[in-house]
Length: 184
Image (tube, rainbow, N blue to C red):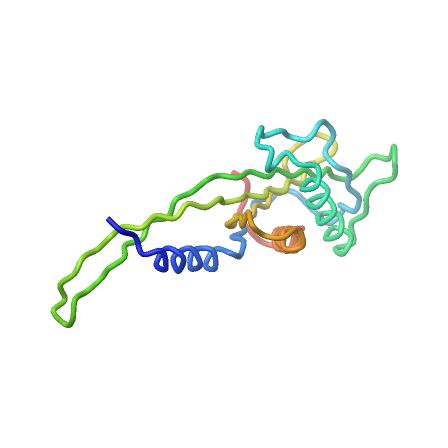
C-alpha cells in the first residue's frame, strides 16, 4: 500500500496550524481576595524533575521563569526582597506527551462516487505549561493556569522563546482572576 506523502504533509500542516495557539484553562479559590497580593517569590525547593531531558532543561527553565517575571512585573507584582516574606509563591510545571491524530484520505474515481478511503496518522508532541500561585503562609493553592499546544521540535530557539512568552502571557492574562471556575 502506497501512501501519498503530499497528503501526509498537508495533514501535518493542518494539525500544526490548527493547534498552534494555546488552549488555556484557569481555576482559582473563590474565597480568596487577590487584591492584597503584591509581592512574590519562586516556590521554595528544587525544581520538579520529569525525567524527560527535553523538559528538564536549564535553558527552558530560564525562558519560562523570565517570561513569568516579565508578565508579573507588567501587572504590577514585584519579587520580594531577599529575606522578606512574599505575599505568594509562583511555581510552574512543563510536560510533553506524544499524541496521534488519525484522518481518513479519500480518492474518488470520476463522478461515480466510487473510490477508496485510507487512514493516515500523524504523531506529534503536545506540551503543557502549568503555572501555580500558592499562598506563602499555608502553601494552599490559590490559582492555577494551564496552557496546552502542539510543540514543534524543529522550531528555532527564537521561535521557541516567542512561543513561551506568548503562552505565559496568555495564561497569566487571567491572573488575578475577576470571575471564573472554583478549585473544587
